[in-house]
Amino acid sequence: MPLQLIRADITKLKCDAIVNAANKTLLGGGGVDGAIHRAAGPGLLAECRTLGGCETGEAKLTKAYDLPCKYVIHTVGPVWRLGLSHEREKLASCYKNSLELAEKHGVESIAFPLISSGAYGYPKDKAVAVASETIAEFLQKSELDVYLVFFDKDSFKAGGRLVSQIKQYIDDHYADERCARFSRRMKPAAGLGAAMESVALEAEPNAAISELFENLDESFSEMLLRKIDEKGMTDVECYKKANISRKVFSKIRVNRDYRPNKNTAIAFAIALELNLSETADFLRKAGYALSGSNKFDVIIEYFIKNRNYNIFEINEALFYFDQSLLGAVR
Image (cartoon, rainbow, N blue to C red; front, side, top):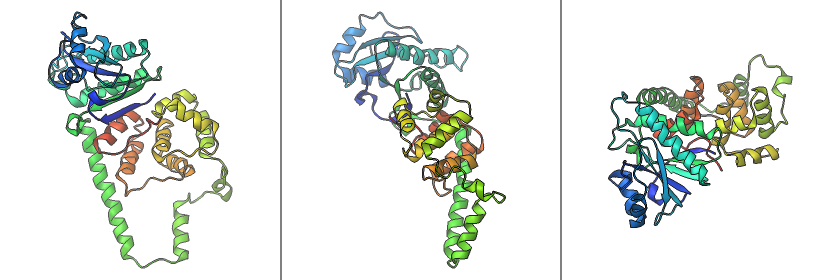
């Protein structure tokens, strides 16, 4: 199932399990650990006293008591020591062991804080990368719903170099589009002939009429299934790369006339690794297009132009810029 990045108070989430970024004693502390213990009530501490602590990278499960979830999974993240003490492997183990423990107990939805990124000093951009990569790998063989929870925007930090490149791209292309729209408003209204000329310029200059009408009656779902076959992918590979749930994909497969929302259509274009021209054709089947006057679309264009089809990295950037995310539709 999909991975979703959300801003929320993890103690108020109504999912099957939440993860506590605990210390080795499991007896409560500061940050999210203290917040979870306070919200759960004294029963949680009493049960934690029976567990004998927890080693770094390991995970243990308790009941949730006064929390709105069923379980709390306690895991101990590594203290950041400049990356010289196998911190990455230990942090990845926190996520992997928590996910495995959740599946063992029949959990269908689980929410994580950004482990080790508070008092333990793990750099936030590196912590996000470890979390998303480890969870994404696990979801290749699992149907869990997973949430990566940030209390506010300040608690999230995407890769600095990537963000700066996207900001520059937005400044260059988003600004260009706004200037172009202003220029168009200043020009006299064009007649029908000019409008027809504009449409013609958007088409492939050497395209034959037969090519323009090829697959005219093909629906979005039919085009998607054809593209999956052409790429040599399985259905499962495609919807997981798109960060889409099996339930949504099943609806698309059985309904020729299924019309996805724009974000779902783009998520499949990313999963299929389509170039900009192919993406435009693909989105057109669902009634959509990318626009230089939309910041979300400009960010998507940036990733496609750079042939970066990692949907989790794309979603990190979208999350940073306060845009809606790709996939994660139930």
